[in-house]
Image (cartoon, rainbow, N blue to C red; front, top):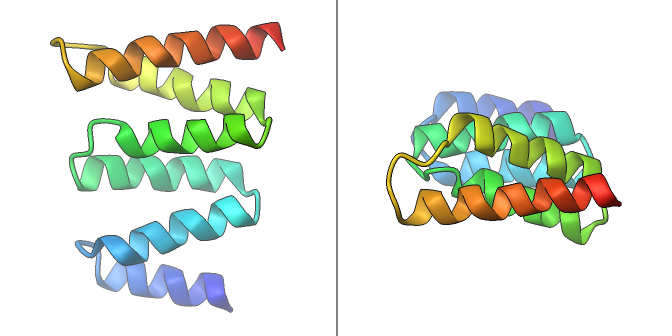
Length: 106
């Protein structure tokens, strides 16, 4: 019932970040990682976060020792956020490469 309510609210109020964040939190708590990644991508694009939301989710996966999930998350960052300039994106891209390498080792 909570999921349906959150989906309904977030669809009605697409420009309100709290509902989108609650959806992301909900999927993460349920370990519905595929949906969590999709939600993070959606938030990143909708609110112009330059991959920061997806990066934070990948960091959570690492903390939970979900290395393969972190690797998938960071591969999305590499694919979609190839650095076009120096700065925030470049740092995220570089760290994402490191995460993928660590996931391969583990």
